[in-house]
Amino acid sequence: MNLFKKNIFWVINIILLSSIFRVFLLDLVEFKSDEAITVYQMIQFFDSPHLIERGLISGTGVYNFPLFSYLMIPLSLWSRDPMILSGVIAVINSLLIGAFFLFVRRYYNLMTAVFSSLLLAFSPWGVIFSRKIWAQDLIFLLFIPFLWLLHELILKKNSKVIFPLFILLALLIQLHGSGLFLFAVTIIIFLIMRIRTNPGRAICGFFVGLIPIVPYIVFQLGSIPSCPDCEAFMKYQQSIRSVDFNNLFRPFQIISGLGYHFVLGKNYSDFIAIYPVINQLKYIFTLGGLGILAGLFFVFFKKQKNIFLVIYFISIPLLYFITKTSAYMHYFVIILPISVLLFAIFVTETYSFVKKRFLKVLTIGIFLIFLGSNILFIYFFNSFLYNKKDIEGDYGPIYFLTRDRIEKGMKNDSILK
Image (cartoon, rainbow, N blue to C red; front, side, top):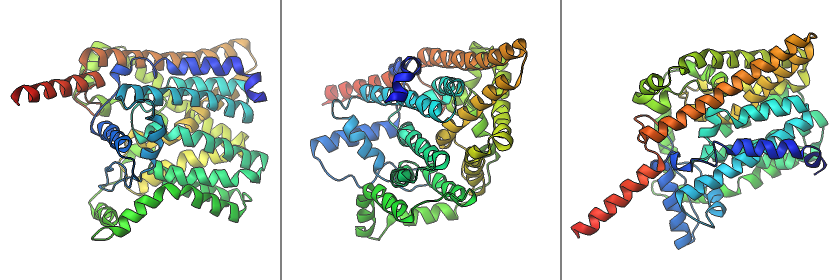
């Protein structure tokens, strides 16, 4: 609470800035089958309360754990309207960026906290994955507290946080597959850095975190044949897959507007044609990746007590690469807070290292240019969505277009009847 009072000015402004592209323009939010199924699942639950046994089906053909659905229940108490639910998720993520500022302010310094929070607030990918009715859009709800507790354990040697830390690890595994890689790398970090833990508290915390998985396990054991998702997972493992080198580049791209070809698909060339300045912004975005790389070196050579940031940043994409996981950007949402933190460390350390005022101004100027480029890109993207409405890529139709199509279909059905 004292930390919040001392930084209330920054916290409030960070939250307000974070909400600009998240809470507003919700009529442009992505709304496809996954989002629609989740909303329908919530409607069914409130009509007839029951244990939800499985979540949405994943790209591997295996159904997800039901944790996301259980998280959506309290968020759906007031309304099951998709736009309102998107708004609730957007508000939660805006508040979480304020919490992220407080976390960084506690363990680093004010400049690093401001820079990293602004980057997180205006990361184009961060905005996209913070207001949809999708599991990845609630990762920050668990990951930012996890990152806070991890710093408390490693930097402050506070072993009391082990119990809630492992609860969060168990929950992150259930929320999205990236949580499994996070868990593996966390154990590796504990071994490499010889972090003292209380095994009993860790095991108890982990099993408490697994409570939401119980309906899923009961369903698998009670099915005929037993464990259908086990069979689906084995089929996925036997499928022909190839290594995706993009996994090694995604963590450097996620803080900027790089990699949007997949989102816009066939319309990406139209996007560039309407806003040709994006071709110039790409060079600035590339410099952002170099800034993260410089941040990695700063931590590795000058801040070795924070070496676990480097291990997470390198190891999770490497595990994706080794396991031949497709390099979809939403798999890297869990790395986004670490990416912006590394970039902010680079800017802060450079500012402290240079002595001449001109070089200090130049350092801040480079950061502001990068941040401004992100803001400009998000503005262009939303303008394109507003005019195009139906994207021939992964984004698909905006919410209002989908809603109008459904309502039109319902009217036609009633006329035919």
